[in-house]
Image (tube, rainbow, N blue to C red; front, side):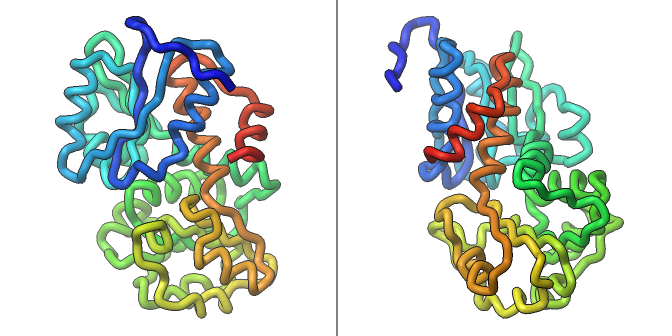
Length: 275
């Protein structure tokens, strides 16, 4: 696909966070841009924790069209934007910021993108037990969405207060008790950075033995595509998904907010095949 020529009219989009150099978001959004014929370009900009607010203010002043926000800046973005959408307000985090007429508008496409990725695989969590590992920015949105979708939620995290805060109705398990949290669960979702390139991995995958044979193990990580968790789950003949489907589905929703153009299902499926 030919890259469009940039001009003085080109609008800029970006993903900010740390790390982001591994991110596939530029490839995904620039693919959407090329197919739509819009005069935009999308970049990856490393921004360390604690600098999210100032970078978003600067981006607004410089006239960027919008930003995606990844860890560890989602809560900073929530506090920094001028207007927060109803969905983002319920999650307490922002992963999409649109700049318009001097204002910054915060949205969260994580939850809807995650549910869309599950639906695309034929999975419906209504009435199922879902164990969510982690209580960070991504986990917040997923906890609310999974509960609203009718799942019985368990949260396994190191920080009890943080876990209870993101979903008071979920059962809480300390991370040391991950096997207990996984016992009998229909779906297990890793929303921690454990296993991501540059991060430590799980000390042991023995907790997977507590899952029933029909369980799905979903790792939100997509770099690497096959994490230690997914490899261990596959060796036990459990269904697995990595974070690529979620990334593309939430990106399509963000792109629609940035540009007003919604990528179609064929485009999403094409990206799943080529990335």
